[in-house]
Image (cartoon, rainbow, N blue to C red; front, side, top):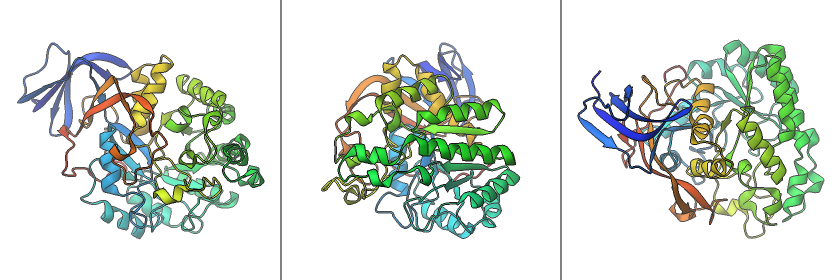
Length: 442
């Protein structure tokens, strides 16, 4: 097919390499990749500047949009504008924090109706596995959710209950039968230390959620996945102590993957001030040595992907007035900043931009079955990003596109600016062109 558009870049991330390329696009797909100096004829050609790199659009599989029901916290229009501004062209919406949660077919339809016509980027959906909805999982799977999310302890919202060990076992057997991915918030409530909470003291909050809680819960997930042949994914790993459990499971052939998040790769507990509740998340940000262990695991491909866990709320719920970690909402809004945050830290450790693309685009797309996303390849959707890796900026919350101007990164100097984002070969603009994705269709 003759390209309608050719994007030429002296630097482009294709596979695991940075190369010069001319990328041909027709009907929203990539139809050719040739040498930079040998572009095909096309109706229109775009040349990237010498300081820009062509990236595939990022795929963020851990986003809490919160609409309908808690739209004051976030919504599809604001979340997807922020995503596009950060080079993210596909998000997968988590099933909780919206009201209703995505735990039945009717609730999924309500979520899709709320999103229709609002989304600036493509949006897929997770279903939820909660007490009592085991019969709903097959219907949700058939309707195209990309997998199921569950909690092994209190989720923080009343309408999304957590699974006890027996319920979790039944959910794993059912998702194994369906061939679906079961995504797990893995902390063991029996290992938490609530008595350690001490108002404004970050050290008390950290002590209340020790690494042992993650390690124990992940061991339970691994055991169930091994027993059932199920597919499991651990969300937002913060505890490096749990990595040996995952390493041994994979060596034994268990199908388990794991993600971490930009905040765990950037901040450290030693530098978090008491009362700084903008940095509260669960599991918590841990010490600098733990952060470096996560980076080592990423470089060794023992952590598969990096996603935002974008979990915003209204400013009052962060309780900056009293700085009470026990009662502040736990979540960090970062979908627009994930790429520069991770690139800033990766560059400082001598890791290449191609690694960042693998962690934040290709690997997330592959794990949820979106094979046309997250890569510059013939046949893939022409979701592309014009990225200036050397340009720096200072984070100003008022300039971010998510709904409420709260950011854990306020005032932080970052490297890497997204100058333009294309969705299926067209620049993302004011008119929402995003599509709602179903399992097996992209």
